[in-house]
Amino acid sequence: MAKTIKSRKEKHLDIIQETVSLEGENPSISGRSKYNLSYFDSGQTYAASFKSLREKDLFDLLEKFRHWSKEPLVYWENQSVGKGGKHVLEFYPGFPSVNFAFPRHIPYEVEWGRFRLNNKSRLIGFRIPETHDGKVNSETGICYDRNTFYVVFYDQDHKFYASL
Figure (cartoon, one colour):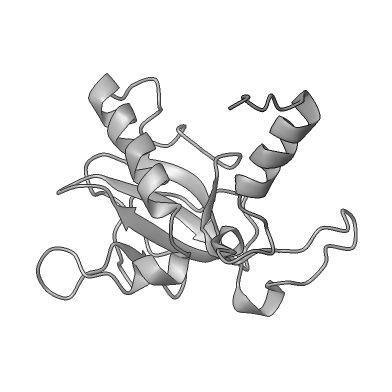
């Protein structure tokens, strides 16, 4: 029996047929949470810089991002952790901290929240309010996305906490 040799074009078409489409059976890409570090601020007293973190803490944070990114933010708001009904992700009714100052480079309308990293460490940030979700920004032409968590502080010692 003669062996059939596939052309480069046929091999390429075989690869394309084996891949997943944005419109296919698994369109979960649109629901996965996103993380933005452009608002990161390590200049406040209790805010850690990435440079000050131990290598293990940085690796753990990257693993958390990878893990959290598999689900929408609302999923993490409903996932219990620890004792007392706490969740992996909690949002507050305003800027709740007495130890951190409200950063002037952050829009005042945002919803502040925190991810629990471990026993004491927290990742503090915000998301776009529901009133802006899906709206097109008039300057950029790009839609606001409530499923993005904007990281502002890395709190190693649990100093950012609700005081409201």
